Image (cartoon, rainbow, N blue to C red; front, side, top):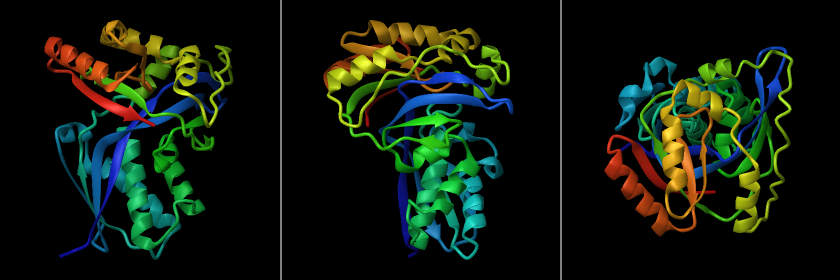
Length: 291
């Protein structure tokens, strides 16, 4: 029997997402507090086999062509930095919605890099692994550690890992894909311009739950208004989450259309999930713990 290595590829949630401006080369400059769920996609690797990828799961049909999948792109970038390393055959169980603002593809790619590092005895702190992550996609570096931290720039500037209390949340996707580039185009920020929307609230490595929630309330997602213009259903989701008993904060994640809400405890989050699914059975609704 071949030895199979496995990794979780959790959802990436942008608790805040401030757009600072746009560089002259067209890339948007961001500042975002990112956290991760404890569940999501699952990726396995049989090391030493020819490079391959198979996909199954409820959201697999929306994953697109295999050759374009970020798992294979990550593996090819890994091979450029470690020429003699073993690659292998990947199998992805896809559960997270696609083009949803929760970094599903980036998290899958980061899981692939972690698996290849394990298979070849390479440290997750190795610079070659970090370079392969950056070459694969802007959100892949922050997904490598799967822990809360600040990310800045175009994803290359990562702050230290944060150890704030776990957050009880609800993640809701109404089933409408939304491309990041379309949201940025709607924001219409000129190359070389700064937005001046306001500074990010201070978040420290050790913070009580109430202090963290207060800081998050002072933050925002600057892509939310543009995303709502493209997909008005996002406004409906946010209104429903905000009105749920026990909701402490409701916000869109990333470029949408997934939104999240933070609740005071698991019971209120579970009640909100039940009520939302009763009214909108086609929506993707998951309770989560973020940290």
